[in-house]
Image 1 (tube, rainbow, N blue to C red):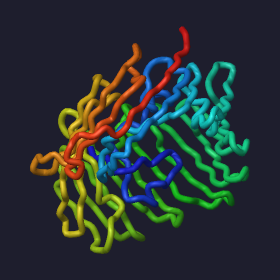
Image 2: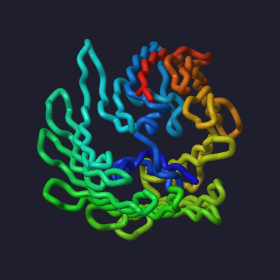
Image 3: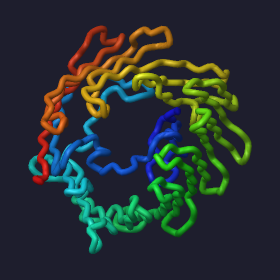
Length: 342
């Protein structure tokens, strides 16, 4: 089930301005707290991280990430895993976002306001439902800049996202159809002009997936994957990259096949093999990128110190490439984590 390279966040049509799209067949983060989405385990209360980068020149290849960046440099979470602070402490002063949560009589979060500390102005306001934000207003310089609405099915899968500018004009919409477990079977995205931009479908029984992009009803690019293997690719001839011509296909044992396709219908295929410290694949030990002939092109290796909740408290990141010729220390990180007491 391909991962089209980029994260379409709930804020509607970010994928329209980038070359890659999200996985159609992946779960939508169901029943995971914000702390868990940040790669943390246990009742995390706060995280403070310091990263020291070496002078080694390293360029990530275009595809699956090898170096897993620190998600939160300085973050706080409440007991339910909601993020209440996110940013960075510099010279003893915190700069970033502070989140105020409003709960109902049953303790459920019903309202969320995010304020940027440097200006004291609101940057985002969410009205919350049982499965996440149902409305979101974003602000620029203290004024409403855009508005989004979200709908969900009974299992918590998002079914529709609508976007509007500050004047209420449509920015586009997305519609999704999912299995109860979150497997996304179909996503259709329309632009601000009301025209279908792209559509992706996946059949969980046959494992057949189709992806197509459109320009005013005319097909620009289309491909089909069956049981994890690309069987067809076509795109309208033209210069440069096109949205959807790069994607990542999960392979056996957690590996990822990386496809870079071209206007002549041919695709370059490489594979990334990951090893992890634990079965939940939170802390990678290594990531090795090999070409179609199996030759190593890039590699990243990790050394950790792990606490009792299996969160790392320090790590060293080593990188290798043909250009470097040898394994080099790229980054040394330290992280202090506090936990809520039971």
